[in-house]
Image 1: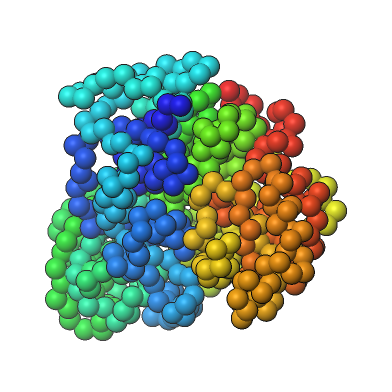
Image 2 (image 1 turned 135 degrees about the horizontal axis):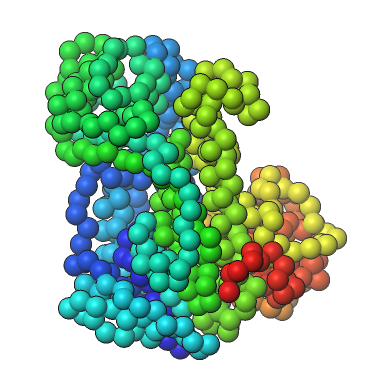
Length: 533
């Protein structure tokens, strides 16, 4: 079967390529550039713990060696500390890392992966679809025709794929603007991020009253100053003056020594593509959506797009296309991003304009700071990973379903599990292989060798039920899972979202849930937005 064609060799495109390779699907990545990304220290990303774990699985590299995992978060207003959060050493925390470092790690892993072919200097010119596949033509030094089974447009804001498919991209322009500086200096909060609203020092020039500081490796920091609405020019002189003023204010004295590494102006747009699927063509990342106001992270959502799409394309590539499964990519991901954009748009007037947020928070400054903190830390409506609660793949009418601390459709909690070979691994390490995960909660199994319990109790019956499922699945065992009683069984999708939790071994319910998860129990048209095909 022909490979999947991926247009765009940025973080989202390379993540999708590696995620498909992990599931034994070949890809061709069309890179319109020369195969390198210019280092820009001021262009960074904050990754939530589960997306950071996704990149670590795909690259085989701990991101802590290349970025900074926050040890804490501090929110200040004027001179007062409004809130302070400390992350324990073993507690999941956001990771701040330069985007060109992410791309470099992914490109190095893709270069070593025989199932991934990167075609540099290949600019997309046209796309033709047929019932059996898709053909892409590229121009440039390596211009040629490429034949693929599917095509994914991961080619950014000005996506050629989106334009060729005539997909509208409505939204709002310049929702927020920030002046950005990456510099090396010493600040009082090692490895802690800071949000400072209305700092007490008096400033001049086109700057509003909010600045964020986020640590980078080797003593570097990224500082973002919120700019007021409009197109006021931020000159180098104004930015340097604000850097010196801000650093002096934070260190209660003269401006400390600093080394300026990079500067820029970051403009946040909010846009959402009307369609994310057009036959065998899909959109992901900035080609499908733009967001980023109030601390939300666009790249983080793009990586979630790739993780969601990869296992569905892999299933179609290996087992034949199932329209309900492929349609669910748009139904799930577009709904989650749209909800985040709506939440941000609702919060913006109160947080930036001084009015009307009483229906969300009481209107106090502390409530506003808490809402912004949620966006930056990946919590609440502005930042928490989306749950596919209304997914067309969600199973219906399971009599043995029970609630656990993870809502149905939300990302599972990472716990230690025993794999089928008897090894102890993390649950997240088993994700992304294209298989469903069946997790039995069995207290006491962690202190006994697997050979003593693998043939005892409910295990033989559960193992037989897993073998009979309509999609490949792996049976795992855990001592505990938050909110799950002993002997309950959890079904987890390949991208780590919870399908259901069942009380005991219930083969019929487990089969029905697995069948729905891969689209087998979804009626034609259910949950699919109009105009997808």
